[in-house]
Image (cartoon, rainbow, N blue to C red; front, side, top):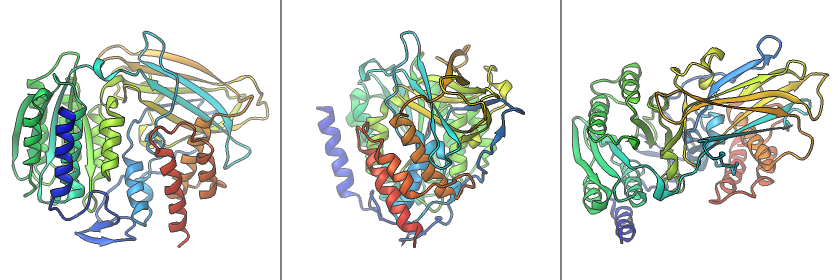
Length: 489
């Protein structure tokens, strides 16, 4: 009965919305004007970064990084390509391209919240190099067994949100999520523009009609007082805090905060203080022209959460239905450390994760913040390595270690796995990752792309789509083919 009721509301929301842009819009909008080939999109801001370099194993045989479970970079780039343009190189974070996709990795052993795996294979863009794929898998939890949730929807209703591909999508997503939650889960709604308002005090999902009515009444106008809104949202989450539950703020916005507390550093201070109290932050971005990607990524990272970019109703289905369990963290402050054998590996390069690289001594420091992995979620990383002349088959070239916490502010657990040389056919997982990495390097114009081509990326991914439960890998092939046509113009 609840799902039928919610479906009718979503249908009504999509059909009757009088806002100016459709939810599956076919072009980029700058100041409300459609621009088919806008690339990069004027006004959107991204952190500038350089690709990780090769490191000589003899000088530094150990590499450490925090995992990254975000997928915003891939969704934003997809929006650009669908609109007929290519994303800014700084908008492309290859680890987020890879981790947008789920991998059918083995489940953790009983008593563990996380499992790790690894393999070595050939590097398609440099035939003298090899690739190492690292895989992590969070413990799956059935919907009915998920801990109780205390969600605070923190929704930007400033004037710039008055579009269907902005506030319209956010409202649609909230209603969708209500339909997936358990009756005893709780939802509050805080809205912010020039002022901050508690639209709905904490309410059980069993009263879904009241929750959806509050969502439907959200309208956009005014400026953006995001700092004050964050503080109110955290206060609301603390007031209804569920011990051993999923206490989480879900932020929906189209860009920057321009009233009150506005600097990224000040916002990070607010988020860091509250994250230590066990409240997670998930950031959902919409729209273009005012998008502050750097700020959104940083506050979600510091807030022990994840960062999504919502470009369509289909993306809402992925986040709030197919991947909904990812909102429940099972592995906190997750770090990876790879120790290379210098007799086997001359040098190595971590592909992506540029802003997640950590000092080696941070690996065993449980006070250092790192990334979270959700229930049933897979995380993947790639290293490109140059073998030495002593390279041998069926031997260990590196050791993969991973530290994580089952709960925040506790001692970490450690997993360890020797990485052995490839002695047979490499997996579809490695081919798929290699295809995405090649695509990402092409979009970035990376100096490390070697012989990468759109055709290479397409073929690698086509040959690695046996596991594709929702068709996302097939869509990727179509995107790469379209990106190739755009790049040839």
